[in-house]
Image 1 (cartoon, rainbow, N blue to C red):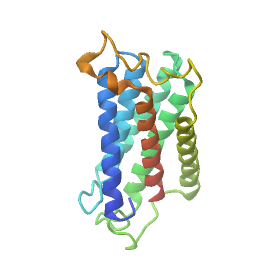
Image 2 (image 1 turned 120 degrees about the horizontal axis):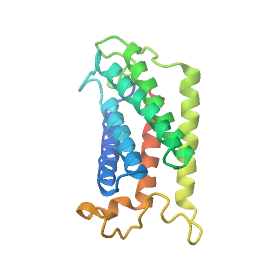
Image 3 (image 1 turned 60 degrees about the horizontal axis):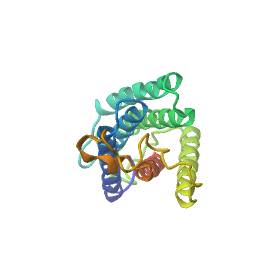
Image 4 (image 1 turned 180 degrees about the horizontal axis):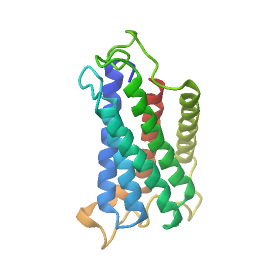
Length: 211
């Protein structure tokens, strides 16, 4: 990724923290749709963290980008398959598919964006920068994630209607109960899940800006 190393490390910290939270949320969810969704978001967070590491510290080429592209290509397909059997919101599945597809796109851009020495990646801003993405596609993804971030932030600012949305991010309320493994009921709070998705949307937007 292009850009100063400090920005890369901040993205690594944000995405790793988000991925770690999603892992805790996955552990706290019973088997089913929400557990799979938390697992997909954990994979996305950690994948973004790996991709954001400045190349001065770790250059994953030549094997890293194809591996990331393969992993998230499978994730994009899997995001759509459960939509036909678990009854979850179609928009949520589509968002996961778009996010995984964006990861495939950025991984392929990493593979062709510059020589193996790392020019044109984080820590080498302005040195032999070679564009790695297709501008129209990059622009479309930037618009999508910018709109998603604004929409998500607006949802957090507008109070929910009485009796609605309290369990939108979880099948159980914040209090947990008998099915709470390891005392992780706090990780299933819907506002934390939404903040997690908002953080990943911001991180995705920032990473796309570097292409």
